[in-house]
Image (cartoon, rainbow, N blue to C red; front, top):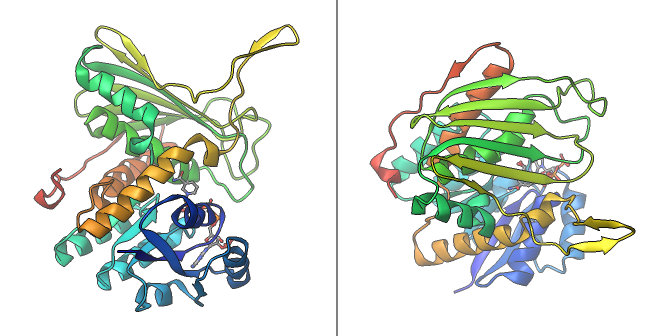
Length: 337
Ligand code: NAP
């Protein structure tokens, strides 16, 4: 069976996902696309050599009779509406993170999916598919470093444009950390605090950069995450887990050790597309396989909701000097792994 996909949003990651579904992965092809910028969508179809229809809006892609499943890669505030429409149409949907821009929006998706009665949604949290994160989780789960006590993390981007605002450091960037760390620790969050160090001169009027987010988990681990999106030097993701008996760190992406010009050096990646390129392939193949076999097992709408509940608290904590508590309702049986 070849799964026929509709893609809504043909910007940076939309084109990446279309390329991988068409040229790298097995079992799927893209048959319809849409973007608010129709001309851009048509150009993307042409550039990628696709035999796909360009439809005037996302809802038409969802309804199209030849589309079996959806990939949502439009901008964040549109995700909820498109995912809800996909559920209403009974079509499986892979939605890029964030699932919705607020926890309330994610909850509406959770409720709709439970009412439908079967998992239809996978959220684009790709880090659990990354070999480095998988290796780190294996070490933690083995018990070799004992219980995790503290985590020191960093999410650094070289720069962001002027449309990127202080809250987006949470809803668009930190959401990756919120998603992957609860998976890594098999834990949830109970409080958040945000601290603003001296701002970099490379930021702009609408963005306080960098930020430090402090989290506490149900099991009592403490996590600090530096979110620094104008760090200039590269796209750099760091995670160090301090346990009772040792410390485990996320592996660096492999790169040649260069001895040249009286220096020893490694290249640091600058583009997010390259840092997790294999993980994106594996997550989307997992989605395709899951749809074909009738069982989605990747990050769920509940995972998107849980991350979003924490994200809402972090956004509130940006405006409050102290701690903001995080309260996640019990996971419904529907989402038990
Ligand atoms: P982008 O390059 O700006 O692409 C978003 C596209 O969606 C743009 O072409 C935009 O058009 C279009 N769009 C906006 N509203 C739409 C609507 N109502 N219907 C259809 N298309 C619409 O951004 P991106 O970097 O590809 O990001 C897209 C999504 O993927 C975001 O939600 C982002 O958070 C997520 N993402 C995830 C990762 C990851 O690591 N998992 C990485 C990157 C991005 P205009 O440009 O004309 O507004």
